Image (cartoon, rainbow, N blue to C red; front, side, top):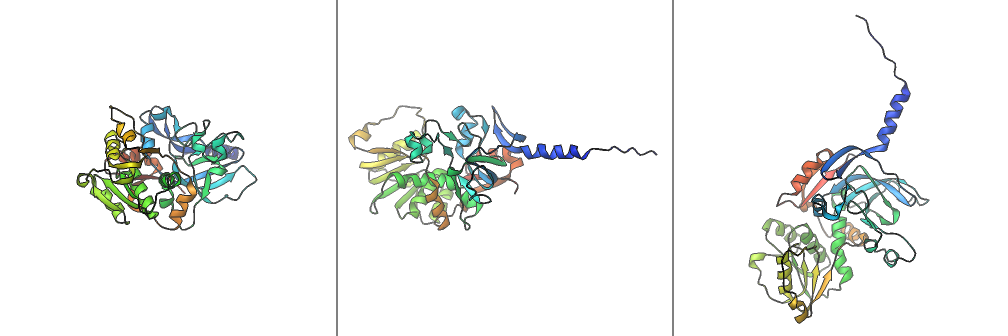
Length: 346
């Protein structure tokens, strides 16, 4: 028997390693949802950081994008926690730190009033993670400008930190509206959005009641001190100072309107695409203020988590490895599922 030896130059292996360093695993939507193992790894531009993702959460917006919302193509995801591995800037203070990223950044032009107030989500020339003009966080790495990154306190776990983005959106209500101690607030909808909003308002000592159709979901809020009531047991009358609509449905909006007292405030927390005509006259007759409320800034949300005022563990329905991301998206479609997390190798 004759043995044949093949000599391979070490430079061959070096080239393979270089190639591996330049690519990454990513969950991409391009007409269809797919897991890509050789997606180009992003390079941080001046003033940006490269973040290695440890844990990410699927949002309903991600699912809507797979149905054509925003016409987006690229890496999905905007809820994540990760570790800063590289910074292209003189400021290296976040290097090696666990961080979360606000989802939008603006043009940074001196004459942009939105960027001046750090309201990047309203900048006409904005980029938004996994939604508009910017690859998202469902990948091993992503990049974002330093001003959008915030360090996660040591006592806040990855599992809690991954909820910072939706929690910040809930905190936005308190930034937009001063709710007086004696005012009665009601939140309609026991999905992720409604639950998180009710938990946040309750953490601020607001007199809030959560209304929903699923007792098991209401029990999550009830266990943390939130007053709850099944929709079928709700007496619809105009007695609430602030009504938060988080059902995402026209019927939910109509119910919210029927609950808002004259000169009260109706907060729209979910986007609703009208599929039928509905009567807006009560808004004028009762002089109701309709307040649109979307994203929020992260510092307030991080402080709430650091103070351990809210526990999001009961909202986690399932965890999947990145290799099983497609299965994770299928799980997210199930009716009783709240939050599905995707783990990336550490």
